[in-house]
Amino acid sequence: MAFTFELTSTYQDLIDGLDADRTARTGMRWWARAGVAGMGLLWLFGFFVVMARDKPVRPSWLPFVWLLLGGLITWHYIIQPRLAVWSIRRKNVAAQHLKLVFDASGIRATIAGEGEFHRPWRELEVFQVAGKGITFGFEGSPLHWLPNRVFTDTAQRDAFIEYVTQTLEQVADSDTTGS
Image (tube, rainbow, N blue to C red; front, side):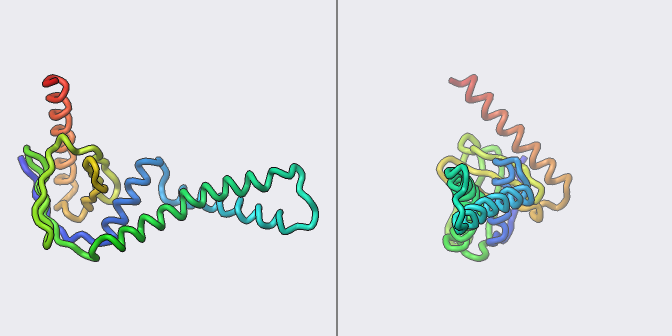
């Protein structure tokens, strides 16, 4: 059995994939991450308000805890994601035609203007199903994104997920019995 998908990948597809990966890694949806980021900004704001007062704060170390927590949270939940989005926009073309073939030998990708690439199933490290699509990634390469629009319907999407899951289990079984 093989699955073939042709699509035009855009910046938004890559950003959706990044968001799906972040959701899977943290277990937090975008609105929860936004709430935590807001708390970080409030702690930073609190540090600056308290330091601008004429009266000393007791205990004197507390504003620096706010600065540290606010800075770390702001970095992790606001600045790093923005840098990742800017990197996607800087390092990728706005739209790129792809043809992906998932078969017994692995995954073949034909990228317009770039050529053809083949990766065996054994190298697949990440396979995450998300609401808007599927994230997959290989050793030493950035994550890839298969948006839901490439599937004709949910039955095809479910069959594809089942196929990849079974294939990965077979690869894992052959690795344990073969070594």
